[in-house]
Amino acid sequence: MTCTEPAYAKLNLSLDILGRRSDGYHDMRMVMQSVTLRDTVTLEERGDGALSISTSLPFLPCDESNIAAKAARRFFAVTGLPFPGLDIDIRKSIPVCAGMAGGSSDGAAVLRALGRAYAPDLPPAELEAMAAAVGSDVPFCVRGGAALAEGRGEALTDLPGLPACWFVLCKPGFSISTPELFAQVRCKRLRCRPDTAGLRRALEAGDLEGAARRMYNVFETVLPRKHAQVFEIKSALLDLGALAASMTGSGPTVFGLFRDRGRAETAAEALRARYPAVFLCQPSGRAV
Image 1: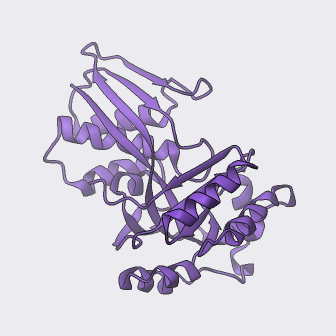
Image 2: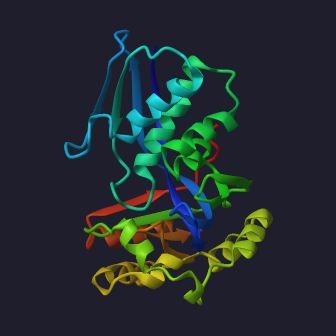
């Protein structure tokens, strides 16, 4: 068995934090959209019961701590199938620690590929249940498309994807600690929250401008001053004609939403003169 699976990045069109749970996690309400920026994951059966991971980035872990390895182990543990041994190779295009679920998407790609190869009759819901034990974003990355994500992110409701549009993604040259941001959030003090219901209605109506007006990420309210470049990128994208601009996940990547490709390409070219990681992509559909 040898197969290659795309691993699509995700964007948070909205992100709201409802409160802290007794298990230490936070209850979330997010609208997420997968996009065409992707890693490529290749799996090859070894036949000797061993597991090896290789990546295109030398600083990523290539042992059992890699989320792709965790996903593979979880699949065979849940299905009860004998582990045949696997070589998993990950070619990275999604930036690391960028708020776009790059690692989670790699793990999701492993689950999808193993499901097709070894358990083709497995319902997608069971694959997503496996994914929830691997990571909070992994169930959405298994499914792809657009969805309302609640709970830790594992409770998914399908939504229509954005109408035809383009994204410009810009990652500044630093990372942000997700636990650090969560530690700064005081849910009862959050005065600005995304209009999730309105965003959902706009998507159902195919209203791109209406969706753009409702995109918001509450993490932006607790960003430390040292990360002010996030807001500089947002302002630049809006000045360059974006319908909306927002940080995705816990950042630091900022995306701008554009109706037409020409303006998006012009904006991407302008940002590349100032920032090292700029990408042009579109919404992508369901993966399963």
